[in-house]
Amino acid sequence: MILLSFHGAARTVTGSRYLLEVNGRRLMIDCGMFQGLKALREQNWKPTAFEPRSVDRMLLTHAHIDHSGYLPRFVREGYRSAVHATSPTAELARFMLLDSAHLQMEDAEFLNRKRKTKHSPALPLYVADDVEAAMKLFRPEEYDSWKQLDSGVSFRMLNVGHLLGSAMIQLRIQDGGRSVTVLFSGDVGRYGMPINPDPVPPPESDYLVLESTYGDRCHCNEDVNSQLEILAGEVLSRGGILLVPAFAVGRAQQIIYLLQLLVARGKLPRVPIHLDSPMALEATKVYEKYRGQNRLPEEELRSGGAEGTLHLVHTQQESMALNGMSGPAVIISSSGMMTGGRILHHIKHHASDPRNLILLIGYQAEGTRGRALQEGARAIRIHHEEIEVAAAVAVLHGLSGHADHHELLKWLSGFPPPKSSFVTHGEEAQALALAGRLQAERGFSAQAPEMGQQFTL
Ligand SMILES: [Zn+2]
Image 1 (tube, rainbow, N blue to C red):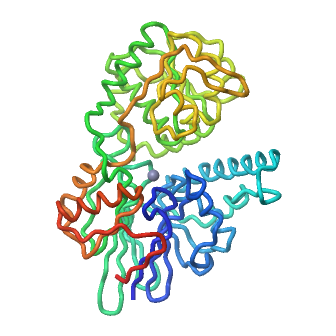
Image 2: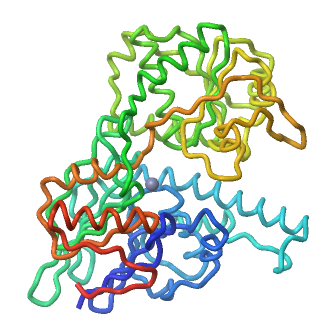
């Protein structure tokens, strides 16, 4: 008997956790943290519906915290078996999880200091030692190679183009006399994006678990290259500084590459691009190491003279030296929503100059400084100081790592209707809309499972 149950990312985006039970053996696909609203974050403190030590295997689709961020807690609670993931996923996960542990320590300390907690003292979900314990369980996997697990289960990981190392996972299960295949899409990437390759077509499978972050949205008319050329071109030609708050893993590397490509094509002047974020430096090293897995026109970048434009900022002194710098130049720094990190210092020193531009390139959650700027605020609070923003502010759309509904259907164009498909990893409206489209346009049997729901395959 094969049972599939949903323990997160069910009618919501975060907390991806799926459990497959094959004749009593338990496999878990993704071990994500719930993020966002308080009611979701509180889910991280509830015990899972099954004992961590009762799980026999863990498979991770990619390193994003909403897919991997619960793992150290799961290990702390008793999980001891292998964690299968691609090599870049394992390497990115290490410092993303360490960063996550660090943020939780900070939050707990803040709550204790302010006595804003019913629980005294407030505790972090996990600490760095739990991350190290989890990292010891990782087993690196190659793309597109079948791996036999015990109990008649084998799996393979295929490049889904969402983030370096990201994978969809196909499982082949022998159950009595029958063979059943199940495909977990993970987060599905897009076509023709900077750095990330196109997702490979999904292999035919009996069952499909499909993400739906943008199940009802369209990334239409978003020509990133020409938008960036215009926005960056204007600020650099007037001698200004282009300030980019960027998520350290994935997004920072994409924007560096896009800027360098515009330099190589003669569309932007050859100016220094300063990357000032310890985590982005780590991530950039992993991107360099797995250069072959990235979509990069190496020859064009080299011959166009874009090489040598990137300046990595290693020390705090180097970072502070950028405070007195004059343009034209680019500073890329995290955090992406300006909730913390070195970007705050750069904004503080350069926001008063109307020649400069603050360019928002990712999602800005409610309540963040990034969101305030996006909505037109002309002053923000940084380190207890009111900072006036005379610099221009612009939003660059189109760098999302998730396929929209057109791209999801394109991705599935050669995929015959499965016995059943389960739409997950989307807000309720997005998940239901995509399930409806799969039924109406592709003749799929599709549903959006609810938290804790179980199905017999
Ligand atoms: Zn993701």
